[in-house]
Length: 69
Image (cartoon, rainbow, N blue to C red; front, side, top):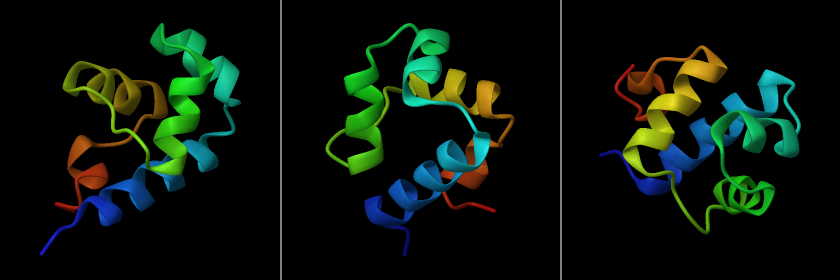
């Protein structure tokens, strides 16, 4: 069974491996750096549109983030 923790770990992995700073990633997404920080801590998860844009920016499949791959 897939858990939110599994998705959180994949999301963090992809953000960290991207080489983007939280500030730059926030600028690209049109959100605040603190929101990116919340994603990395697991306090919040991106809205669907933000997740789609995040996957595009990070060049990663949404299926990977959601643990379908």
